Structures are given as C-alpha cells and as structure tokens.
Amino acid sequence: MEIRLAGSVGAGGDNRNAEVRAIQIGLNHWRRTQVLPMIGVDGVVGGETIGAIRQFQTAQFGWRDPDGRFDPQGNSLKNLNAFLIGPTRRLLEPVQRFQRGVLAIEMGDDGEIVVRPGDWPSRYALAIYGDPFLFGTFVRIKGDVVSLVAGPGAGPLRIGESIYEYAQLLRFAKRMNAPPPRKPPPLPPIPKTEREKIVERILREDYDIKGEQGKFLADILSKVGIAGPIADVIDVAASLLSKSHLFEAIATVTGVAGLFIGFADSCITLVNLSNTHAKFAAYRGLVYAQAAWAEGAPRPPMSATLRANMRGLSAYDRNAAETEWNRVVAAVYAKLDAEFRTPDEKKVARAALLARFGNSPRELSRAGLQAFEDRFEPGVQRDVWKRGYLFLYKE
Image (cartoon, rainbow, N blue to C red; front, side, top):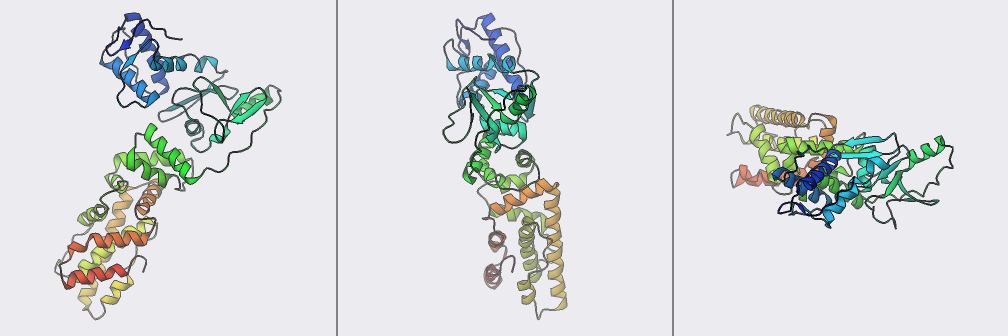
C-alpha cells in the first residue's frame, strides 16, 4: 500500500478527501505498531489528524516543531511509505510478534525483520530478549556473506532493508535442510559508557525520561545487578519515577539536603526538645539509618562515638538518647520499606541513593550530618555537632 499524493495533506494543505483518507489509514497502520489509539478515517483534516501527523514526524525525525503536513515529494510521505510497503507482507509466515511497552517487533519464520523508520538494533534486542545489549545476534545477508548489523564497519540500518535474527535463521535453515549460514565473529564487550548511552536513549525515546534524570538513571541501570532482563530493571525505575516522589527526589541532581530534611520532618518527633542528647541521637540515627538502608544492611545500633560521648551522663539522659535513636531508625526503615516494596524496587532505589553520593555510604552520612547543622543552636551545641563530621558511617 503505497500512498501517492497530488497535493499536500495536513496543516495548511490541499486536503483532498480521498488523499486525506489514505493518509489517515496509513497513519493508523503505523499507530497500531506503536500501540497508539486509532484516529478517525473520515477524509476530513482536523486537530486529531494534524496531531497524528505531527506525532509521526516527531517519532521519525525528532523534530521539535513538526509542520503537521505530508507533501507529495516530502520526507514525511517517503518515510510513511517505507513503513507501509513491506513489513507484514514481506515476512515469511508464520510471523512472530514481540512486544514490550511501546515496542512492537514482527519477525518472519526465517528470522527476517524489515527495518522501519526509527528502528535500531537495541530496540530489537529489548523487544525480543528483554535486554538491549544483546544486539550481536542480528545479521545482514549479502550473497554468501553474513555480517553483524552492529559493530565496527557495520553501517547504519536502512529503512526497508531485511535483517535476520541469527538463531531463528539457523533453525529455519536446519528445518529446510539448507546449509547453515556461517556465524559471524562475536561483538567485543560493550564498554560501560556505551551501555549507559544505550539505556539513556531507551529512557529518552521509549519512556520519555530525558535530561539529567535520564543520564543519572542510565548510569545506575547499566550496572544494577537484578535477576532477569535489564528491561525489567528499566521498567521498575520508570515506574518508580512516575509514582514515588522520594525516588524522583533521589534522581534529581539538585537539592541533596532535601533528601534528609524530608525524612527528618516525617520521622523525628522529639518528646523532649530540651534534651540535647536525645536530639543528637535522633538526627545522627536518621542519617545512619539512611546510609545503612542504602547498602542493604540491618538497622544500625547507636554509633560508638555517640555512646562514648554519653559516658558520665545520668541514666535518664542515656536512656532518652538510646530510645530516640532506636525509634528514629525504625521509622526510617519503615518509611523506605513502605516506599520501595519489592526486592527489585529496593535494589534500584538503593543503587540510586548511593549513586547520588559517589557510591559511598560515608559520603552519604557526611552530607546528611551537614544538612542538619542549622538544627542546632550556634555555639557549643553546633560545635559539638560539627565535630561529629569526623566520625562517619561506619565508624
């Protein structure tokens, strides 16, 4: 189904009824593969049709301000036709369909995949295997030469070309009693920086997570060790970012102190504000609890430094301080465990929290202690608190 236009269709176009209907039908074919709702097919150009054209142009070209129009010789029409001319009709039946989120991939019985606009090898790997780094399984065939579609000298994917998933191609060849295609040499290990770029692109293009948040999450997701495909990890992080204000705060590059102040406001309710020792224990316990939770450790006991400083105090003061420490630590763990419920959510959140402080629990505790400096009165009380910066988690 190739669309030919005599005039333009869309915003400010000629908008002949039959040509508008053809564009609407073509856009619906594309939208179905992108798991987008269908638009009306009525031959009339309105806001819905123009919006769909702009959505297509943004997906294909990355335009920030698409014109919302198909011109007879324009690139937008060429890309739509490149999509329409082949994928399902050229694939060898039975066709296998793979879908993950907004990604939808069709593969023929011989492993053939027809390249569509916007495709790239990691997208295929993500949809088929759940792992965007396994793109070393896709090959080109030219005569008797089988070569990888990614790697040194591979060249970009071309819209409309056929590539193959090697394992499926091999199974098909055996079933047909054909000579097996020669397997190309494997790709070298993917450098960490390249893995981060791949994850960052997936977050940007498929989850609409961009900018500094995208870079930060790409950094932690490329190295978080979770059983199962990395796609599951990406799904967990994207879900947390949309539903957890705390995770959003962790993933934001500014306002580090806010990570601690927010906890203090919800976890510290001192029974006796005049008891300085209880106050010291509450705030230091809160910081230590966050550091311990971030590295997956049990609830921390009262710090040795704080306990040593309480020698010579009355039993009442020592008990008050210990009570506040234990109560605040328990409150921090309860809050974090309620916010991040599943093991995968906890792993992603812990990795993100530590990454904000150079993957160092000590630096996390240093930043936390400094965040509460102004909670203590200037003079002796604040000086004592600041001396505590020399003794960080774990002491």
